[in-house]
Amino acid sequence: MLSVDSAIDLIIARAQPVDAHERVSLFEADGRVLAEDFIAGFPLPPFANSAVDGYAVRFGDLVVDQPTSLPVFGRVEAGAAAQALAAGSAARVFTGAPMPPGADTVFMQEDVTLAGDRVVLPAGLKRGANMRPAGEDVQEGEIALRKGARLRPQDVALAAALGAHQLVVAQRLRVGVFSTGNELAAPGGERNGAQIYDSNRFMLLAMLARLGCAPHDLGVLRDDPDHLAEALKAAAGEHDLLLTSGGVSTGEADYVKSALERIGSLTFWRMAIKPGRPVAMGVIDGTPVVGLPGNPVASFVTFVYVVRPLALALMGAEVARFKPLPVRAAFTYKKKAGRREFVRASLTPGADGVLEAQKFPREGAGLLSSLTQSDGFVELREDITRVEPGQSVGFLSYASLD
Ligand code: AMP
Ligand code: MG
Image (cartoon, rainbow, N blue to C red; front, side, top):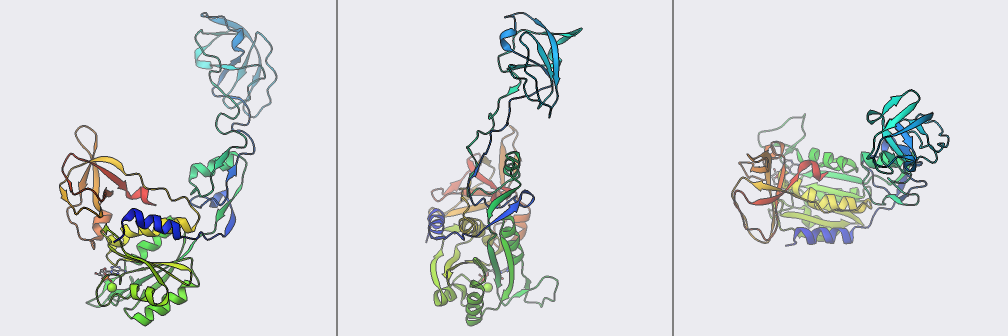
């Protein structure tokens, strides 16, 4: 059985990035993967400017340790050009206005007193105070955004500040999603007494959309080995990645693994992860296929640890490891060494303000409410065998898993 880390390493090593790029407007760039380094063509800010509303001076004109009185000449508003500052004078400036050439320090208007056409400046300010030098944010020629970055709103803002209105991003990954199982009925339709409504497909499609993929709903496959193999083969040609859920354990009606072996190749089958152990990964006609477990919580966890890194690697995105945040366990838990376990938990601040993880009271891998009523997972690594109340554990919020 493969450990979670070795599975991820294997996935990243095997994934051949889909090299198709497109240019999108900044309005559509959020969540996309940057396909090339974005280099600053000029510094940010582009020119030295005032950080406050106030009075710009030459620091050298100030009297040491005493207030200084200077005549006020000139006024520079944001967006206006600045005249050079005459020696021995102050200029009225506003936030974002260019610094008058020669000026190097700005007094906030709240800190000065006006006397006729002169301004009295208190002692004690440092050279360069309240002034934003050109390039203090980003320097010309610097890599502002790296190839492989998954663009966030702040990244889009930086590109805009650097004058770009479009960015070159990886094309959305075409991901097809099947459910498998004779027991599955379509939500909105009839359900006979032995059926359940398919939920995994909707969860997986939504998770893929959050990753910036183009998810395609491929419906439900019956538990029939030939039907399954044919459908997978046909879909492989049309997609960059295929997902199935259900039909990967050792039961007699579990045909996904055998279909992979028959019409493609199996990369791995079992991972040391709970919930989620039976998860199959393989390749059909060059298209990676992941067979996720049928139980919804297992499907969720293995999506996060197998599909997510695979999809990101296929998009050419940097696959950063999760950084679980330390919280205090408010539960007791026993586990087997050698596998990674995920405990659904909610966070509440303890009496001292430190966040405490409360374990969801029930454990079944089929309990969807355990996911809807908790905040995230406590991640218990392979070497851990028990958790005691008060112990520090690593927590991953669902919001951090997109
Ligand atoms: P399997 O691995 O196919 O035996 O499925 C394990 C469990 O997950 C069974 O109880 C299935 O009914 C359930 N399951 C499989 N696929 C889905 C699905 N798409 N939505 C909800 N439950 C499912
Ligand atoms: Mg099944």
